[in-house]
Length: 282
Image (cartoon, rainbow, N blue to C red; front, side, top):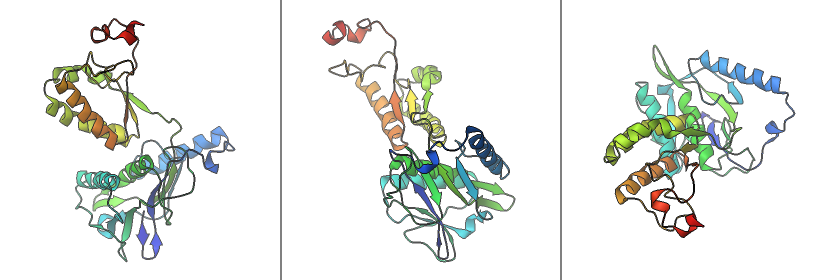
């Protein structure tokens, strides 16, 4: 996602159903482990860390000063807005001035480009690339994960905010990476009557999951309404205020590419709100 004079570098993202040759299995596990360790050491040497450790990582030039950069968004969409906010939040946290957002590259600047063009090349599911040549991007999750990685490539030295320019190719080895929200149960129940408080407190937690590329949350709903969306149920037997709170959290998780899941081990028909449901009695 970057252009220096005539040289283009994009944050490119892909998520496809098929694997590229890099995933052919020809490489020995020991070699893969060594490469991941090398990538980890290359990041920690620069005082940065991207999660998960990218499979392919190359720092191809010296770091770039924030003042030398421009953020290029050729076409505004819901997803580019999320991507833009993610990069700006990192820069703000580091104490830097915000990048100017422009629709076209600026000559003489290091242009960080969020490109929503379609790319025909195949990558594994949830795969993405940060590249130095125009290729484009395909699926939303890939776009968001590429931006999360770019987020992690910003850091700060004694003179200000810098960006560690790198080419990256990565994809998830586990399609559903989940986090269990049960540890938040007490807090959730404590504030179940205050949906605003719950939502505001949940946003940093959800953001943290997003920045670790976790795409599924388990057990994030109210007790005893975990199964209110069960296919066994003909109607949602849940008080409107609780449904509203759950729906607000779900909608925000959707913007971060995070799905929801509830796993339960129960004796069918014993939960109060299911006792009158014929499907549960059968």
